Length: 149
Image (cartoon, rainbow, N blue to C red; front, side, top):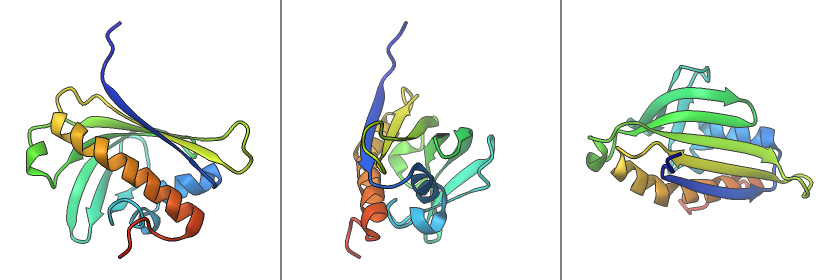
């Protein structure tokens, strides 16, 4: 079996899985931690999603699978970076689950893979997804944003 490259990020957040899911799928909340971008989708398998920053669409993809509030799988393609124009869509999988031992704590794992033909996308997400997760944690635990406006 071939080992394909992947980037895995994990964080513990003091919040219920349902609150993490809502933060991930509600544009008003997403914009608080995802580089000021709001996510838009009908949240149905096979439907598109878009990530918007003000009036510019930054990324897009398709909802490949979902099991609220536990799992969300989406294809991913950047639109706002010239270096990613030739990249094929990659995949981001969000896994959300209650911590086995810590009451009220949710483990969020984000796996980025299928980026063999999307090297520039992989570099951007390798640096960006830890910031998104840290921002989500800060927002859900404190109500504040990670970066000061």
